[in-house]
Length: 335
Image (cartoon, rainbow, N blue to C red; front, side, top):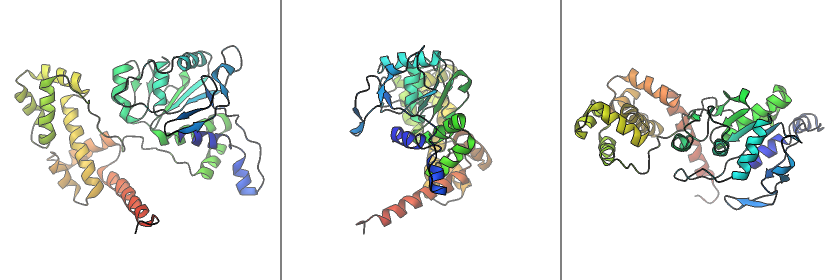
């Protein structure tokens, strides 16, 4: 979807908008090529055929160079080992970066850039589900979990986009950069492209390690899953563990990637999100049910973690639920 969506949009910049508005197409402004390691046809996940225009060898440092490279997404399970999968492509990407080519990625494509070493010391984003993978395998990359488009490293020749549909944001950025803002707006109008100005945070779900090797911490995780709403849950976990608070905090973070209080807050917010998605009960009641005596404290924590107020989150996701129900009702043969 990312590859063909980007290709469809970028190849029509400058041409399709005047054709739709005036009836006369104008010159297309971008020369877009699909490239692979060897240039041969292949199938990606879902058995979708891809026919590259050429191999990466056509573009080499000291010779012909592109203005920008986009690394699209590929399927990588969150429990997989991401390193060493694309050595030839990584070497090429590193050479492109050293030659001054802008490197960009969408979703899991950032894993390839990270494996090439070009994200070291930079902020970068990818799908929120790869947070723990980045922390484990690429600790020198400052992973920005909530961003839809990370531009902080663009002066270093790096731009990364978050989850799959963030290719819209990346396309808008690239069109603006190389063709001008007006063409970016016109293209967005043609393709109904939208931004994700609120970032990924409203969509992100708490990720937890599949296997916690520290048995003591695993027991505490099991306990807190049923008791996160109780008073002073962190103190109760520490007491239950039988070890000192500092030692507990260190072991808990090493095992889960969260501080104990962050873990509790994440559990509480995840439960609150699920209630907000389906019910109309007062927000203060939801806050109390998940462990917050003070509704204003709940709203503050929720906004910080999710990027939206509880009321805005409810409106957004209940609207999506209504839309989904509408699709279900209108589907041919569903009745």
